[in-house]
Length: 350
Image 1 (cartoon, one colour):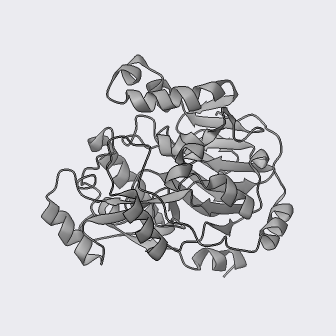
Image 2 (cartoon, rainbow, N blue to C red):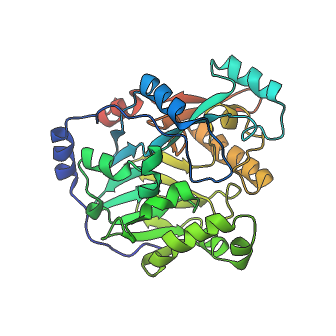
């Protein structure tokens, strides 16, 4: 079984919690995200209009921490995009009217939506493990790329990270790997799926319709390959964190199961990208998914288990703080149930 080699030890839990208490709790309110993204095929409204709307309406804390057994989990909002949609990106094979009915039933706007980007820090034993890295400095102008500053507010510097895990290699997950051409997390080792790295560095990727994304991998991921472990399903990141195959969104997309003192958590990455459209209608196609049929099968398999075993999960694009549960619905879909105080009570033994 693959295990990531030891890296420079991270901060102790005691030190991290001390820093948490002295950091003043929750970071000052989030400034709204701008209109631009790393995806060249997306369009947005005028930047001045977007900024005005966001300043008026967005008030979101930037990080949240909770305990899971002996682990300390911190979700960090790298930024949030306000854009047109969710149709036709979500429900790509359905009519606008079907999507509108679904959104209306869930008290959501029918032509606009907000998409968050939430990396996760896991402090476990002597390791500080970061799952995904957000947009980095390339997202600053658009209001993203807040991971490092919010890590600091939560009590962690980038040098404290011992392992960076990439659930897959889309730009919004890997652009934060480099700052000024140098590794953002200088003491870390890295891990990603073997199949994922193989595909994005292949001639097929470099010469096909995903060539732009492949170039991002070449510039941000490949320079770190000598410090990278390539995972297969069932491999351990460290004891208590297991990689699971979850292809479809990308060829080697992976999710991760955490288990500490019998308490479990799933990091589902981009298995579901919208808390209503992707979960209540898991068989609706999503434009971001490279293999839509495989993504649908994976979505149902992963969330059937999460629902049946009542496992809390963190989704990279779920509403911040991105933590919740999935309730199986009679029609085969799932209802997203936001986490409130369940994990706090569980940590008390209640």
